[in-house]
Length: 368
Ligand code: MRU
Image 1: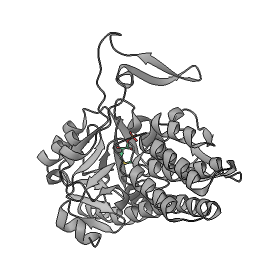
Image 2: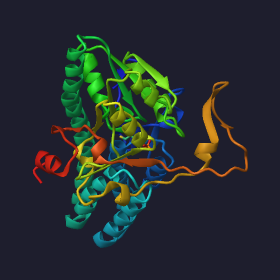
Image 3: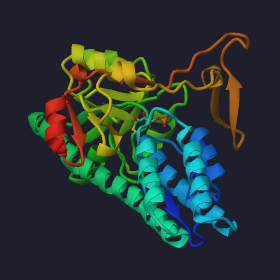
Image 4: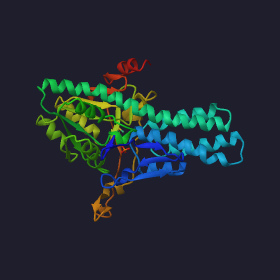
């Protein structure tokens, strides 16, 4: 997508076969490209959120295994030992963040290559291609989500006689969270491209403020009208008829339609339900967990350090700085995701089309 009118993706291989990423910790203030050369550094980049977002985490894990395949190639070891090193590194990557299922999805594909390929040379080639494929599929799925989702926006616009469609989103399920296009934002970009008038309410999304920092930056780069709101404002806006629809992303979706997304999503879904505002989750099928039925009780929820709640980060004197917001000794809890039960979800927007958030419709959509 566009940064100062130049096209970027969030992750790519450079000419030296190293992985380049946009370091999101500095956005929106500084645009920094980071080179990742080792699997260990990739694991750190995922855990410490240099990069983030379900689809991008999956793509990064795919490339992380490729870095491991390169690093271990110079060792004078048998192919079995070589595979052991790669599997160990895959395990290290898996431990970085628990909620987004894309991480497991990408690693399963790479582990399958490790377990089924003969020589080291053949293996490294396969792993490289798989990493590229995972990233490419993510990008194409997001593009398709945009095409299907924009039709819903178009329909609302038609019902409003072409007046502005107000869309509320939470966190950043934009192109920065995937390889390109995004999920929640992709229908918005596509609707805007088609000339539909849109305005986006951007939840700030405490504690890391992915909405205020990243979604607002993305939308601004594309010239899309948007307004940042504090996390508590959405309910009020819905009561006043100022939201036409909600679109959020998903980090893990059960085959029954429950959606795990950034903490606070559930409260927006409740407000939307109470005010008859359509609530959609846009997601590629790589976020569907086909083994989990009950999202609230079975999806692992990441708990991050309380420091993220107690300190706030911003731009001062040309630098990103952190300041303490709370009494120094107060405890803080930092649950990073919550689960919205399917009954509050109007529909899911996927690369295959839009369907109801229920087992029958989801299985039908994906031929399961
Ligand atoms: O903790 P993050 O920033 O990796 O959170 C994940 C997300 O980006 C959001 O939950 C998003 O809305 C889901 S779609 C990637």
